[in-house]
Amino acid sequence: MNKKERSERTQNRTDATFSGRSMVEMLGVLAIIGVLSVGAISGYSKAMMKYKLNKQREQISQIMMSLIEYRSIFTSVGHRESIVPILIKLNALPQEMIKPNVSTAIYDNLSSNITIFRTDSDRVYFVYSMNNVSDDNHTICRNILESFKEYSDVLYALGVNSDTEEGMNQQSWYYGDSVSDNYKKIHQLDISTMNSVCEKCDSNWCGIVAIVDSD
Image 1 (cartoon, rainbow, N blue to C red):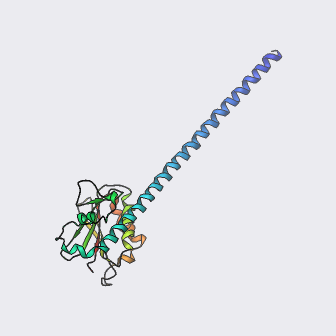
Image 2: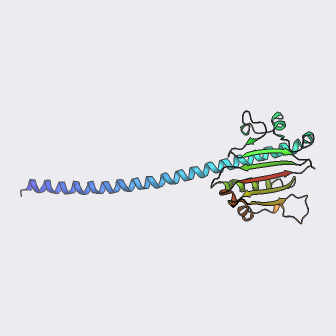
Image 3: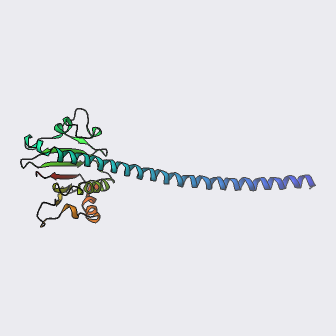
């Protein structure tokens, strides 16, 4: 083997080594990109959910402030009659919650159906219906409870109803500051209790009822 042949063979081996190394490096880079992409998607999803939950709390706050401000007007509404049309006329609801041709219900940014009506006791019922079965329902339920907890001084009661697969209806009720201390109180709701109450919402129909006191 002459010098030229040896040189060519050595160069071929070197090229092969670099080629193999480049392939391994490329696979490594692709793996890193894949991991980063999964992390980015997960981070984006969490950020979007946090934004939606914050928006939901803003919507609840606006509606509660409207119910408090116009509470005296609702005495003219019949038993179990929706007061959503009145709130719409008063421009007292977030516009994004109002659907065309739907006058008795509104919808929050997480697609929960909301009905608001008066009873013969002059109390106003604010009812959230979480109709979609979702792994996020537990988090949404807790967010709603945390939102209403801030209004324990004007709420008569706050409850969570859930239907089990066996057809059983389970209810958990907590009461406002003006109600006797013999009852479980809204302002005493903690994260552990809310998690326990809301965990059933991930796999079953769930409804949350906030009752605004008449006083």
